[in-house]
Image (tube, rainbow, N blue to C red; front, top):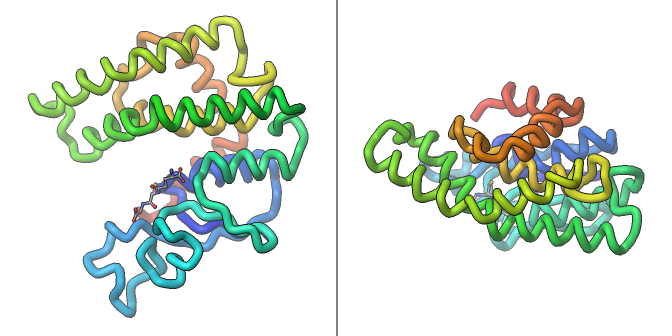
Length: 219
Ligand SMILES: N[C@@H](CCC(=O)N[C@@H](CS)C(=O)NCC(=O)O)C(=O)O
């Protein structure tokens, strides 16, 4: 049985979405971000990213972690590529060429987009979007994101999906990185194809199943 350590309000959502798509049976062991607790090491603190028993699985103390028949894997995007290959079928790379492209887009999204997309969502989580500081941070981040988002927009002008002309793990990985930025309503306004593709991704039954659990989860 696969075990995912994490919770829906974390990068584990990427893996939990993929698992909904694959219908693979799995167990979710709830591990919460340590910064949600005053004293994460208190004896009565729930399992969290600083708990010694979790740190044995993740020296970085970061979720998600996947346990798969003795394989302990961290890094959500790598976990997803592993699980897609394990289950096979349309979500998975059909050949080495597709695998190379899926790895390319995962690294592209993680290195060119993720930090700024997340920072954008933090402006909203801090409720600073209508302050002068918040507005200038939003302007700075959206300007920085023009280059990678324009590249994705251009890619989607002649591709229906990230790789292979069908919905795959590559779509899940990039879509979940972009989702943070959508807290800013105008995030994708300059990129209509990207917005349309993300809408299609979010229309999938697998995303909706993950999302209803996300919304039901106490934060
Ligand atoms: N690159 C990693 C990032 C993992 C990560 O930073 N996870 C956050 C939650 S989204 C975490 O565990 N934070 C808790 C902590 O750092 O104590 C991945 O994609 O899996």
